[in-house]
Length: 81
Length: 329
Image 1 (cartoon, rainbow over the protein chains, first blue to last red):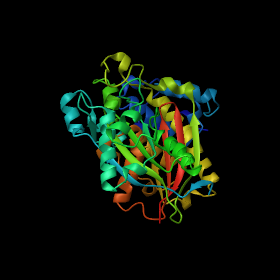
Image 2: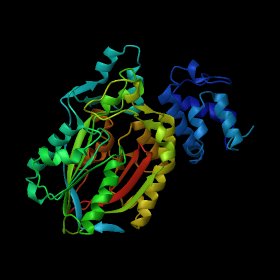
Image 3: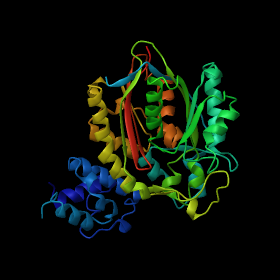
Image 4: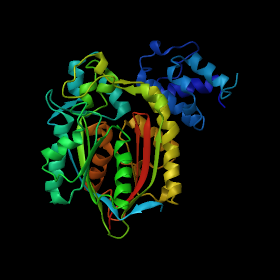
């Protein structure tokens, strides 16, 4: 189980961007490194952090904003409020 | 080990087209692409491309001729030819029959194509091993050949920077040397994901370059499938052979991209140096990646007599497979 701050950290680490680049409401279009390959890096990092549970959630492949990812993870009870 | 005893695949060769494309070439063609950023993630710096008129069948002929010459193989001993390709010469006939004729192989031979991509080598090896083990055949020329470059939209950054053309050939043969086997085969297919990696058009020889013939790949869904299924299939193969990952000397995974290979390394909790990687200078050659990697690993001394090698292929279909090979002593 992760929280919103953990999620932001995971996304920033996956995209190799400075802390603070990713914040609430941020969408992939607004972050240069969040392209299709960047999204793959996010998915792999998330999956490893959540012990392989992300690979089962197909909706994540189309979740191109931090809030969309958070919403899906909350629905799957992998993220606390 | 739950296996097919006395089967070897140590005679391997491959052919890469004369034309190649480096990342610097791509950067010149597409200054708007951040080529370095992509290469950092994929680990691919160079790819091979066929000429407009060159086909996968021609690459297959060249790889087979190299193999036959390199190992001084008696052509008359070959009683089966299987061509793994998704770039067939025509819709029909099967390209393997044309390959039989072009190589001047005997006519009392079993020849057919297998239409599989990245899992193709492992799955075909399973079919061939079963046929040799049940004495239906003795010596199979197993060839993988792909020209995905013909399917790629020239403006498709993601796919253009990954896929590469090549052909690989190997002789799968009965071999009664000690500790020589292929086994623990595990296969999987899931057609519900077929739309995630698809070309809707027609065969190579009269291929028209239009959007119906361009490759579409939903990279995220393919990655999720890989992360979900590949660790499981590897675990099952190890279990079938009563082995642990520590018993394996080298893993030769489908060379998809570094992003995928690194993710699998983390997920399987294995040391990176236990996983062979030759992506950088060759790229993702679809069904050819595993036999090419096996050949390169032998040449680099990473595979030695008696080595236990775990192979796993996965991708278009969706389809996957894994097995363990014990290299002849």
